Image 1 (cartoon, rainbow, N blue to C red):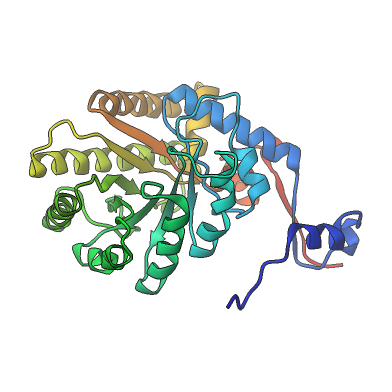
Image 2: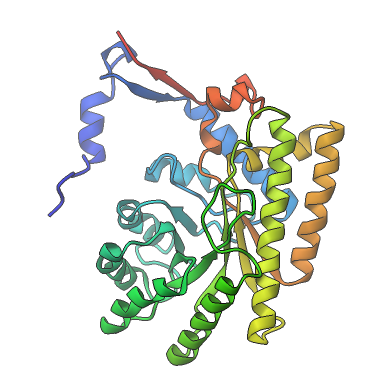
Length: 332
């Protein structure tokens, strides 16, 4: 039973289309759709030029309409049919989007990453999603070997486990996850390898690193964000190398999923400015991306907020007034 039903698009349109801003219930977020489109196109081009993949992360809006804006069709993006969601309700709600990529059926390359830790109570709902999407579409995050125990429910339902991303600590003191090159990572990898042998399939898809979005106060956030981005890529590379050594699979491919809003905005700044700090950081970023590609590691930039730059990004000089797409109405 759905205790909090979401109103249909038709019901919302009937309620609000044609109303003036003064007639909206408050507080209300107001989007400049032209700015949203522009921000989506600029970010997609920047990430494409840098050679990263860029799956739409829907966590900042949770709407199908804006998800389609995040997929910029004239820009090559091998991850365009991969969604990143933050809640189980979003995961269930975006099945229709994944099906739309295949004219009503999920395609072989349609994938969705549930980008939050999975509680045991959500396993039955994940199983239902797996049944609808197919055996290779769903990925989840893990950072401890004991979390694998709850996946027995998939086998009981005669389904394979979802694919796995190991969540890596960013090394900067503000995120959970397992440390790269740690005993805990080795134990988790060993448990996954055993499961892969038992199930006769590849389960470990890659490594995930997030966190430290806005620094620890003061300084050049644009420059800092690129340094943070470099650190997160570097930590996931270390984890991938460590895993290859421990498993004896020297050439096993992995996806490195990293990011945060300032890091993604910093990627755009690489292409726009000649600031010495940005240039130095850009050189470092490009260098580590070359290393990742040479080692058969696909870097995937995650960011949910880039379509919606607001006063926070403006205040940190991470965006310009022209980029701002979110306003709000709080009182009459």
